[in-house]
Image: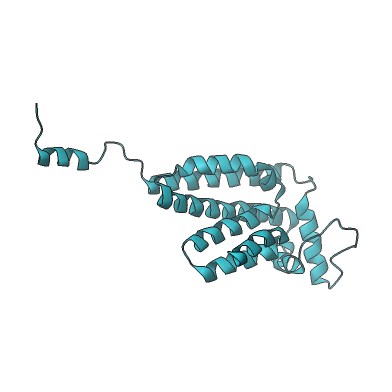
Length: 198
């Protein structure tokens, strides 16, 4: 049986019965990140006596508020820029367990925003990207840093956000992300210099 051209066009244009659009993928991606944040934060409350990098951040912020020296000259301990200690002071004013939970949640949340925005950029450039899969794989890769509360996640988020804005030629926004990232962790200087060269 032959199908006329207009009928064939209508068949091709018809929406599929099951449609997996970007917004649905974004919702699943966000849901996975919320679950991930809850797991990490609840695990932190389950073992509050564990010593991690947040102890170093907390003590540096306390020394900043007391106008004491941030560095001990050993090359260990607090090895970030002074701006980081100043930025961390609001968390140091909270009870330690709650500040640790909040920092972990913010770290992961900011990184999640970076991953989702980067996935959206990739989707615009190369077609539909499985955001939930990108999110799940990212979680597997960052588990150790997320559990420890390392600023590597926040720095990585600033890098992802900066790359997205650079791709969209939003120069000032990219500069803001790179500046915040530099205050959080000096390792981002590599991307800052590369951006300046390019």
